[in-house]
Amino acid sequence: MDHFLYRDGALYAEDVPLSEIAASVGTPFYVYSTATLERHFKLFDDALEGIDHLVCYAMKAASNQAILKTLAALGAGMDVVSGGEYARAKAAGLTGDRIVFSGIGKTRDEVRMALTGGIRQFNVESEPEMQVISEIATELGAIAPITIRVNPDVDAKTHAKIATGKSENKFGIPISRAREVYALAASLPGLKVIGIDVHIGSQLTDLAPFEAAYLKVAELTEQLRADGHEISRLDLGGGLGIPYERSNEAPPLPADYGALIKKCVGHLGCEIEIEPGRLISGNAGLMVSEVIYVKSGEDREFLIIDGAMNDLIRPAMYDAYHDIVPVIEPAAGTLRQPYDIVGPVCESGDTFAKGRDMPPLKAGDLVAFRSAGAYGAVMSSEYNTRPLIPEVLVKGDQFAVIRARPTFDEMINRDTIPEWL
Ligand code: LLP
Image 1 (cartoon, rainbow, N blue to C red):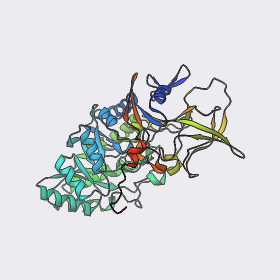
Image 2: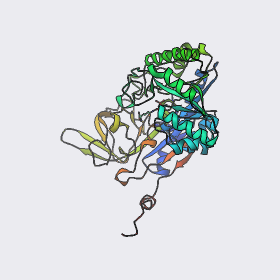
Image 3: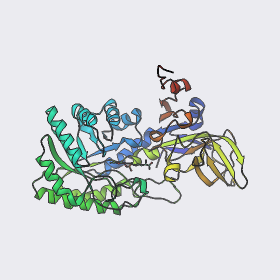
Image 4: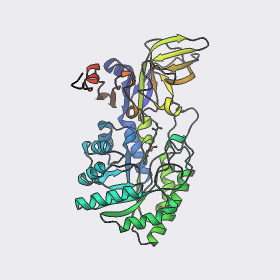
């Protein structure tokens, strides 16, 4: 459930008509609903009630400071994967003990930054990385809390580009080698092994792969404890999917996911962390765009809109489906017609949907892309020198620009000319 509903024939974000935001900030833009962000965070937090836990929002999904502050105020931790994200978490007011550092290629600078600024744990992905963390911690006179990310060789049954839990993927340490790698960790100075980490992929729409992975982690916990390691924390990753095509998708709910976690690992007495990104921000955000032209092709109608692949790359990159709805609600019984919905970028890949049934639309009409709050704004670029589009946050009847659209001068002036030119 989200807070983008039609009211009196127009689409609203909470209590604000989208047309009012469009008139104020121009199109295209991203808009997020505070109530939906909060609701989704609480769903996870409530799902783990009864066990010691921390929900660490994977900010790679949407990392605007206003979004981070909204979630931090509810007690969220953050999962970060770069120095930039670590700095964002700190800037949003999080203390190090609520920041988890994931990712397979942490640089020395990033490790130093996190050890100096404070960190809840590093999720270590390889032996060379472990050596580096040990070395830097020793140099700083610090102790680095770590988990080791294991790769459980489980098929997440999701898009190949976002599956991470099979042995062919670059992530984690093969679970079959885990005991040997934990032994190495225990022998290195500057490290404190506290637990196990696993993340098998994103947009999972079935609980079975989670179950397979978590049962393997439970078994490993017992083996490692028998080997003498203190395993007190399990980071179970993110990945729970959302309904992109609402008319025919119903992925499992956070409550079911929480029950599964309790069933698989609840008996171990570990503190549980999860790292959801998409489910928290995905359906809490829309991209709103205006129709520039309706163009008749030989055998189809093109809806040319002012949003493009640089603003929302998921359809071009993953053939992802997004519901696209008119901002003015069509009257009951309005006949729909198929459109190819495309952006202005000079690539055929700049296509959001083919043959999508929509009510008749004309230049100047607004359309909203649903489920665009995760991996939307954060993956956008300035390709074709198109400015990054603004982000807007709504709370009740208020809205605020939380990232402004840069001017052309601001974009151009980021370039510098060598003195010989
Ligand atoms: N933890 C780790 C270690 C991750 O790699 C990810 C996502 C998450 C948590 C959060 O997963 P989520 O709950 O959001 O599924 N750009 C792609 C998605 C890439 C996901 C990468 N890792 C997309 O637009 O679908």
